[in-house]
Amino acid sequence: MQLLKDKILNEARVINDTVLLVDTFINHQVDPELMQEIGKTFSAIYKMEGVTKVITIESSGIAPALMTALMLNVPLVIARKQKSITTQDNIYTEKVVSFTKQQTNDVTVAQKLLQASDRVLIIDDFLAHGEAALGLARIVEKSGAKVVGIGIVIEKVFQLGGRKLQDAGYRVDSLARIENMSSGKIIFAEKNPIYASPKL
Ligand code: 5GP
Image (tube, rainbow, N blue to C red; front, side):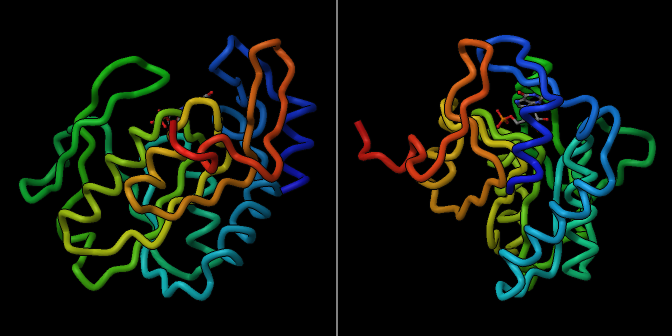
C-alpha cells in the first residue's frame, strides 16, 4: 500500500534494529485518512470471505481494526490486556508475550462476543514474532469460530512472525513489509518475503 509506505518513509523512526516508532500516524497520534485507506484495503482483500467479526488486541491495533470493521460492516472485538473490575467470569484467556513491553499479559475476551459460527479477521498494527496474532487466533479457536485471516499494517519480515503464522496454517496479509532496518534505513520487502523461501 503506497500511501502507507510513503508515510513510513517520511515519518517513522527506526529506534534500533527491531523497533520502529510510528507515533505520529498509528499509535500515539493517529492519521484518520490513512486508517480509512487501511480499512478499505483490508475490506477489499477480505470482502469475499464472509467475515462476521474483526478482532484486535488493545491498544494500537484498534484504529486500523475499527476502520476495517466499519468497511466490512461487522462488529469489532477488542481483546483486553488487563483484567479490570468490569471483566466478567465467562472469558477466554491466553498468555501473550508483549514485544514492546517485554512482559506476559493475560489477554481476555468475553465468551459472549465470539460464537462458533463466527468467521473472524484478526487485525494488528505490527507483526514481529507473531505472539499477539497467535494469542488472538487461539482465543478465536477456543470459541469454535474460524480465523479467516490475519491482516497486519506493518510486518517486520525479518522477525519471522509471518512465517510462524503461515506455518501454523493462517493466511497473512500485510500492507507494508519491512525486510531490513538494521542500518537505520527502512528497506521494504517486495515480491520475496523471507518466510516464503524454503525452510532451512
Ligand atoms: P508480536 O506479537 O508479533 O511479536 O508483536 C506485535 C505487537 O507488538 C503489536 O501488537 C505491536 O503493538 C507491537 N510491536 C511489535 N513491533 C513493533 C514496533 O516495531 N513498533 C511498535 N510501535 N510496536 C511494535
